[in-house]
Length: 175
Ligand SMILES: [Mg+2]
Image (cartoon, rainbow, N blue to C red; front, side, top):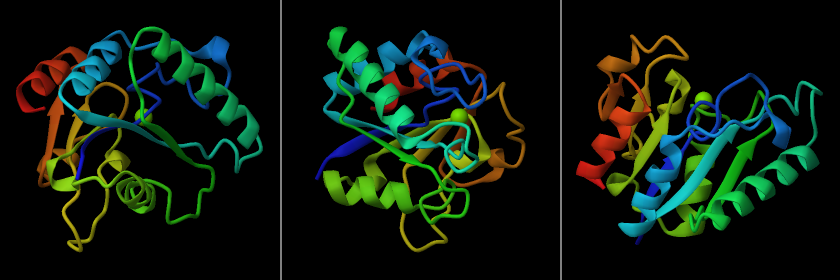
């Protein structure tokens, strides 16, 4: 089995400007390059799990998201950084929508991931997967700044960090 570093996209990979779907609107978060490099070096799969309800809301299309993710993937590959897979959920009412664990389970099964040995990086309470005690999800590292995380502090296997640099520091220790 493999270990994985799961990444939320908006707020972790790129700045969350709200419903980002155009390449021109991608502003990379500086630390993401080192986070992916570290995961690559330490043998972790890197998998993006992102809610994209902008599709359901009619703001952009599946094609837009595919195109954007292809460009982001190629840009990272150009820096010798490997993302193994990109998953997104378009629907607001779906088992795949975070915090529901559908995307996590799809990724786990497709890539043969041991979730107990894996990490999720996010910026929102919904980046903590609801496993309802049925299975052990990844350890979750949340970054402060974008959303109210005060309830997330109390959850098991969740740690909250002041900024992306602090998460990178932690990843150097735990990956
Ligand atoms: Mg986010």
